[in-house]
Image (cartoon, rainbow, N blue to C red; front, side, top):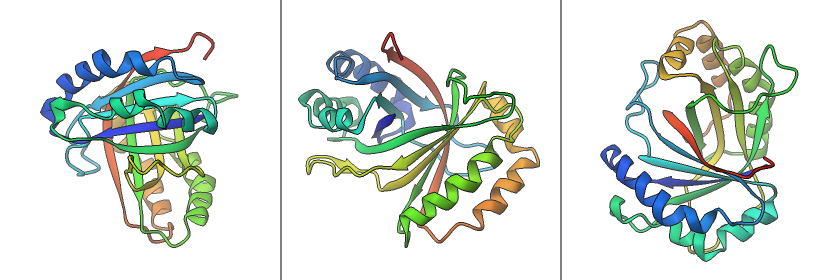
Length: 231
């Protein structure tokens, strides 16, 4: 599966207005996109969590999940997509865009990775510069998801991996080369997990990563606003 993310910048106080404008003005033009599986909207759950002090995140994050890279290419070249990037309430011209392969990883107690239904997502992004992106991603995906899956109360572990797609000149990439998302029932459940001994294991693994620019961590509430019947 391919995930296209729209990362809207602006003050957290604009979240509700931005969500309403996106849902009313942009959503109707997007839901007819070929290959679209679902659209999820993320909003900040908190300015930070005790284990991380990254400050406010994006007031709005939108994921459009599609069947294939070809479908994603058609989407980002469409007029409806480019119109969806502009939310007047945020006072800027456009959002940044990320296109990733989305991969669900195993968690204890499930023969297959379960559907992502719990509403609290801890959204992590990794930014360059990084000397060898492919090596970094390979090391990360071999080692990090099994540790994340050990968090108490974990519902899902996902990684968002780089794809071979060049954005049109009119679009701006966020600069993230890798994404991660762990999913919980609530913000309290996330903070309980981050207070466990597992976090030290996760941080120890992080110290083995090759040098990279920086990463961000934000707790976000996620809701599905469109889902194709067969997805």
